[in-house]
Image (cartoon, rainbow, N blue to C red; front, side, top):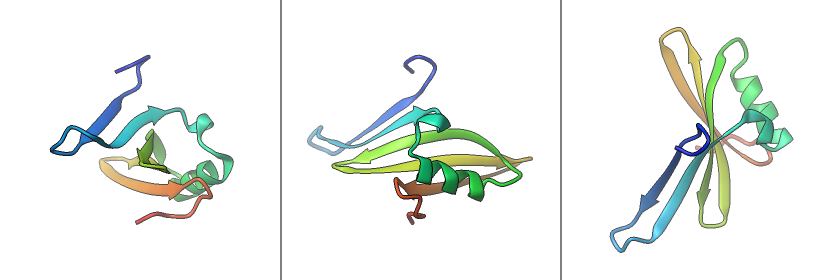
Length: 83
């Protein structure tokens, strides 16, 4: 935890970094990605947003909560949903 934000590293069996998940403020997410996350979360609370870096590919994961139900949405910088 750095400055109240989490950072997770995924390593392969050789110790090389496979991906980095770093919690970020929604405001720091590219405009198109933020708009897509906010649209998906309409009427729900965005609990956490993470920037996920795998090699040169960056996506954004949002944890969305409504009551006891939690869902995640992953989008790229252009706002397209990533499966």
